[in-house]
Image 1 (tube, rainbow, N blue to C red):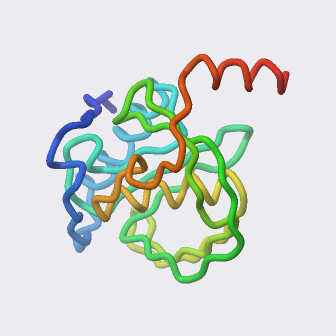
Image 2 (cartoon, rainbow, N blue to C red; image 1 turned 120 degrees about the vertical axis):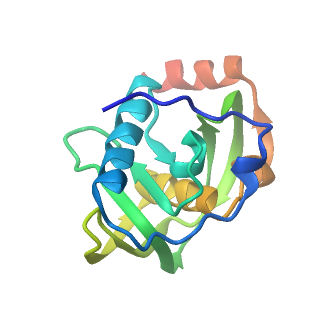
Length: 163
């Protein structure tokens, strides 16, 4: 496995719609492994293929806490519900945070690294992370959805208050 460079804004790769994956092979498995290592090394909870220079529909989410890593190939949102506004950040936008409104619930159909189709339902923070990464696969950046920017100091103060 390898840690790849994360592409940061501005870069045209981040705004391209990604191609569907048709070949499920060792190259794809290696990409998923590299993405995981890169995400962990960068202290992230999600990463999409275009963030490491690959314009294919592949994304991962890992909330830690003993949960299984979610690997999504060719994900498609089939149902959403509810709404909430929370602060988001992105590895491709270092030190930029903002409030983004997203659905509270999401149902996704995707394929795993071997091409098997599966369905996934998520709520709250997990749903937000999944939708953020799927947006990347369509060239949609979270900064286009920010309703209010939050500076790092404000974010740190909020985190301290929660502890």
